[in-house]
Every structure is written in C-alpha cells, then in structure tokens.
Image 1 (spheres, rainbow, N blue to C red):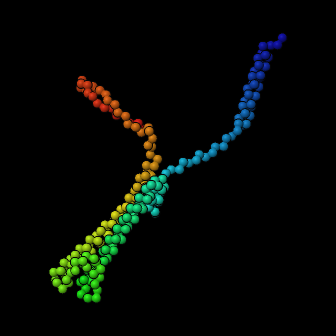
Image 2 (image 1 turned 90 degrees about the vertical axis):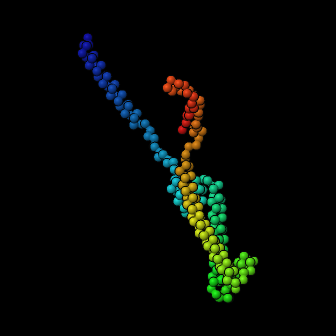
Image 3 (image 1 turned 45 degrees about the vertical axis):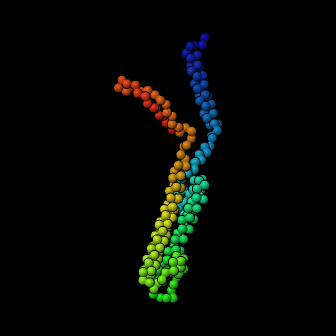
Amino acid sequence: MISRKLVLKYVLVLIQLFVVFNLKAQLIEADTIPVVEQQPAEEEEVHSPRKATLYSAVLPGLGQIYNKKYWKVPFIYIGFGTIGYFINWNNDNYALFKVGYQHLTDTNPETQDYLKIEAVRRNNYDLDNPTQFNNLKTALAKQRDYYRRNRDLLIISIVGFYGLNIIDASVDAHLFDFDISDDLTMKWEPSMSNFDNNFVYCLNFRFNF
C-alpha cells in the first residue's frame, strides 16, 4: 500500500513541474510578442508671429500673405503708392517755388524761373514796384515752406504706414490660432435674487469658452 507521504511527495513534484512549465511558456510568449516600432509624432507647425513680423519688415505685404490675409496686400500697396505720389507732387512744387524765390531775390535779370509759376504769370506782378515785389517775395516763401512741410509730413506718414503694416502682420499672426468657434458664446437670462430680504430682478450672464 502506497504511503500517504509518498503520495504527497508526488503531488508536490507535479505542482513544481506545472509551475516551471507555466513560467517557461509565459517567457516564450513574451519573447514572441511583436515589437511595434514607434513612429515619431509629427510636430504640428506653429504659426509664428516672429516670421510674420520679419516678412512684413523685409517686404510689406509678405507677412499678410504668410497670415493668409491676401485681401490686405492690395490696400497696403495702394496706400504706399498714394502717399508716394503726393510726396513726389509736393516735392516738385517745393523745388519750383524754392528756385523761383532764389531767382527773384538774386538780382540777376537772366534768372527768371519764378515766371514758370502760373500764379505769378496770371497776376502780372510789377517787379519795379517795391510793394508788389515784396508781396511776390512773401508769397513765394510761404508756398515754398507750405510744400516742404507737406512733403516732410508725408515722409513721416509713409514711415508710419510701413510700421503699421508690420504691426498688422504681427497682430494677425498672434490671433491666427485663436478659437472663434461657436463654443465662444454669451448667454443671458432674467432672474430674481434675494437681497436683504427683498426680491430683486436682475440678469444672469454666462460665458462659454
């Protein structure tokens, strides 16, 4: 008759063998698990305000193209063209009155470019008359200074317009990824609140971001 101790011994050996084979099977299965190669995540391109600012500084309108605000480009160049035209127009008139004033006051009878000015020809000044001479001299000086001042102000304005073009590109770039979806809403509704044991009508506002 088989002793109880021998049976227990056989049972323990079988349990040990089962545990060993089970662990070995798990190790083999772990070794055969396919390794999935992780692909590097594609970095999402960030819209750069620095690039937009630099582009518009190098070439006006280029930052607006980078921001995909194409409709602004014609207005930028119309603005530059208009200001540039009036700078040139005022400068031509300034040069005309400047030379006319110089020729009037240089006492050289052969220099008479002041006669190229239509207003001078139309009024037919008598330069031998001291009063008319002084009136013409004052008028030429005033017109010369007027056109010079306008030219200088327009030069300042074109520099300001250039800076505005850069600022516009930078602001648009900062707001390029700004969420303007339908979730950005404001709702309001009437309500009643208890204030100092008195009911007060009021409005409740709720913002969704």
